[in-house]
Length: 125
Length: 385
Image (tube, rainbow over all chains, first blue to last red; front, side, top):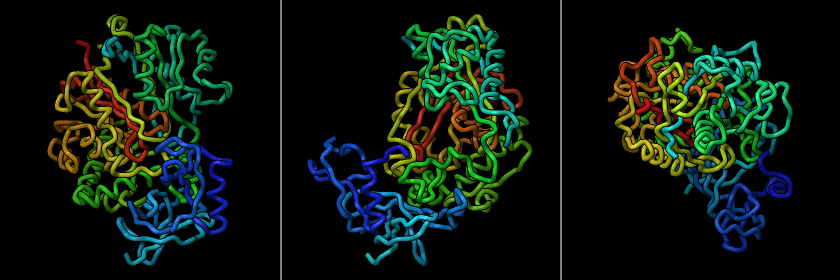
């Protein structure tokens, strides 16, 4: 773990409540991710986790066919999602047909690799 | 100070194999002995080292390179735990030499006794809390970059498969390659191989193997008294976009990584891409080779696969690339793999590459890392003027 402790536990506590949050800088108003000790735009340490709408767009998508370790079931979708609040994250993609690049997506929750994790599914949009 | 006053005078590459009976320290030491013998230098000539400490033994104290002074039995004047090895270690060593901190620097590393058990190599599964839970691994990060490129330039998929087939066929003919004798491969073979992470199949992706690699670096002045034709550092450049494998690499930023480093390196060398005779690009996957042709200025964006096909990147081509078979077929030894690129570049430039020698090769590029890793580095190596 490169970061941890109090810096990121708020994110995982929210995940446990099925809530997706991201750091929002109180100085410049920008969202950022992954959590850092200070806002990467203005370097202010005055930031807090705020809920995300969970709506966004797929920046890039792939399908993993070979499990990196036994706890993962393949194939599964993996992508970079740009959230509407101006931040992005790596996430699992799900659906009958997996969301592709530029697809509008919304937050859902899946069990993946033995953990409950945020995932994204396609919506009309 | 002038970078080209620094020369690589010895290279050592141990036997590369899928699984070694030895351990990482042993292969690093084996490689070091080979490189020193190649340089015609005793180990007591080493007064600087960039190697870290692969264990076992040693201490858990940083910097790990200091543990080598105990093993070699020589006091050191300079150490650097360069990350990774290859070009960054070469640049560190050159800095130490040019500022008078050391005269003869050993760079060595590799991995052995660490793979196996049916799991992918641990270094391909970086353990960050925002990456590991999703099941991402290094090839998946590169895939997320490649997918966006292929949405823009669909023809590059087949072109990349041709690149993989060509480099693998080069390695097939190299008796020292881990995949020696395998193949020949066609682009169809690559496209139809077992899918790993889209767009990549097993044959698009580099190996995870075991062995050591080492180079010895000193001043050009000293190099002139040593057995081999000195190979000097004409230029070098590095880029660090952000920490690897935490935030995912984005195509719009990562596809061109290496362009700034190439500007620095070519500027220092006073040459351009058209002057490169052999390209030891960092072929972690097929599309990365095309990407590097684009980022380094050999051709325009989206033209990398056509450039490879038009110029020819096999040993009989106009720009032989990954002439030992590369990471795809020769070997990939973890953090030691970038040093393999230096070793092959040196062999080609000084004319000691044997059956795979590219006639008249005078300038080589050796590279490390790539788009999905979000850092990149390259060095231009050439004959002393």
